[in-house]
View 1 (cartoon, helix red, strand yellow):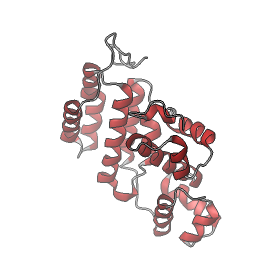
View 2 (cartoon, rainbow, N blue to C red):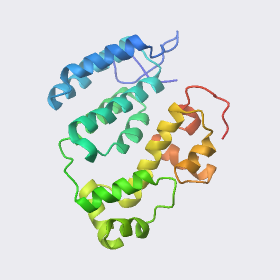
View 3 (tube, rainbow, N blue to C red):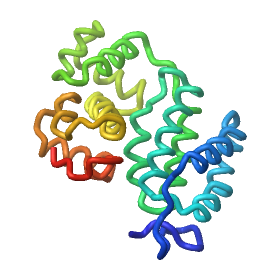
Amino acid sequence: MVFYDGEGRVFATPVTGPASFEEQSANELTAMLHKSQWKREQLTAFIRGEFVQWAINRRIVPEELRTFIADWLRGWHREQAGQEAIGWRVSGQILGAATINELVEAIVYEIELTGRIKKCRREITAAKAFIEANLEKPLTLNAVSREAGLSPHYLSRLFREETGVSFHDFVTGKRMEKATDLLQHTSLRVYEIAHLVGIPSYRYFSALFREWTGAAPTGLRWADQDDKG
């Protein structure tokens, strides 16, 4: 499996196999990130330099490293941009990175995104909150627009203006974010998680999840590798 090499350009698994992301490594990386996290420029420089070298030296299991970074970035967004952070973008870009360069650029993109996020209008904030609280239900543009007190057409236009993504992509992204969290932190079967995020078709959920994250749902499990949904 390709992931690390000595040049730091492509991650290539060493002959001895990748190392597990143990608590010591997690604490070490967290401390390193914390040193510069209050200034985006310093954090970006760290990611492009020290982080790459640290990752090459430690040779952490790629999946575990990507998952750690995705979780950390969600916290970064919340700290920097509050509830307006578009956290769902993190999962697809970070978990889908296949090389060190892709991972680094995805992290830098997420860091720089905080400087572009602006406070949403009250109606869009209400619509987003409704979506996140009802992911298991059919979330049509008509249904959400009624909750927000806007016409479907106007909500659709405002959604793209305020969040930078379409209504459909925002809903799908939030579903994939919740599904990722459930896959990583619960023992629910894949078909159960699909229902909980409003996508009752196991086959469609699996295809959509892979499209958004670059990984199969079962590929994110820490255990129960025989889970077939």
